[in-house]
Image (cartoon, rainbow, N blue to C red; front, top):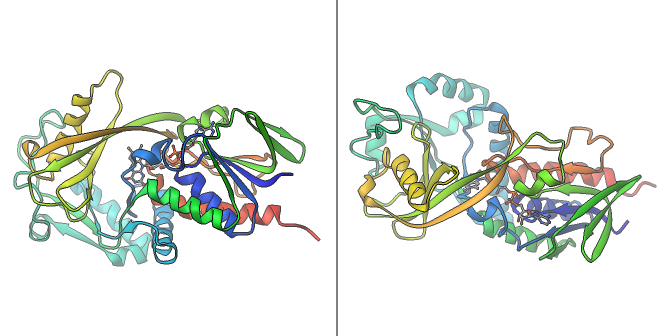
Length: 359
Ligand SMILES: Cc1cc2nc3c(=O)[nH]c(=O)nc-3n(C[C@H](O)[C@H](O)[C@H](O)COP(=O)(O)OP(=O)(O)OC[C@H]3O[C@@H](n4cnc5c(N)ncnc54)[C@H](O)[C@@H]3O)c2cc1C
């Protein structure tokens, strides 16, 4: 075999897996058709890293992911900014939040549930008149705000993180080839052949980390490519000093740079939508909680696709890995930046065990 492991795709998932696999003593090869972090969802991702999720399985992953980001920042200098995340929720969500606080007691002790007056005292940039535009819900009077504040959460810079992880993986012995599109894979007995024309490689295992393009290599997996449009806005309101997720409007944002320019969005890509439509939707969603629409000036638009599953849970190899030597590490459904490093560490550990030399 040429390699213990070939990884197809060098987004955040493939780069993180290459890093942990090399650190676990494996001999990995990563093939990326573009440049690390530059090809898919990772390129446009906001990288907001928070723990709370309505799905407890994803929440458990997020909790491990946040710990892993902090560890990577401390040990490898990776770009994780612990500026805090404010999550605006509907009153009907509060019972579920309390239940999660009991289920995840460490997290429960570290978050604060804040009511309208407390929120306004703490976050000067919150909109004075939090009204949903009629096009979003037709609300007559603005409801009071309710928030969940995770002080230790924040955001990573996914593109830079993918590049930094790739560099560290190389330093630990991984081979990483950029500008290397994989066109075919073929399982044969005790290994897999990978075609990256004009070269061919053999490996004990192949991991598909090709984001939205993973479907071509994993035709049996039930997942679809979906796009998200993300705006960068300049604001003439108060500077945002933490990440914001408004679960009611679907708007979210994170600080960017020293001024009032930040990334925001969350608008799914609809066929035929123009750049102006997408900016307007992003702005309208955000304006419920932050500034007024007239104070948010679009600067750039980023469009990118991720691989989505029906329940938003990722496609990961089964616990025992099974007999197949072609394994998925994809399906992060627009949420992967939070927990990919934790999932990569776990998968690398399992693969290192399977490929270790036997006496
Ligand atoms: C706009 C947007 C905003 C997001 N915001 C957040 C957020 O705030 N918080 C969060 O937790 N998550 C967020 N996400 C989700 C998260 O960023 C993604 O889940 C994660 O980046 C996916 O990484 P990946 O490596 O699986 O896929 P990708 O980044 O898509 O990487 C796949 C790579 O495979 C390569 N590739 C494809 N085909 C081949 C081939 N044949 N041969 C070789 N290489 C190939 C591509 O070039 C690409 O580089 C967001 C996603 C988007 C799109």
